[in-house]
Length: 81
Image (cartoon, rainbow, N blue to C red; front, top):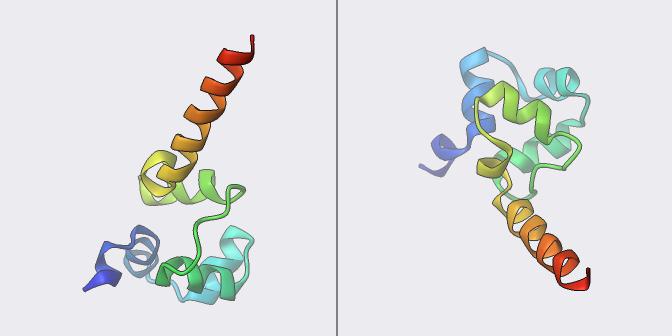
């Protein structure tokens, strides 16, 4: 089951929270959190530190695309200097 693999949903269920409760706690909307749990939206960068800390995951585990983008940017900056 795909939901069991989602660390945000796993955290919420383990904490005994409803989607609306966790969304409020994290300062986001019900819709955003629901899309994150369902895998239709990536975790917004501004929520990444909060979610990483709460779920015990690293930001890189939650958003590997940002790691790759950071590497590419570093390479571009290194080439231009």
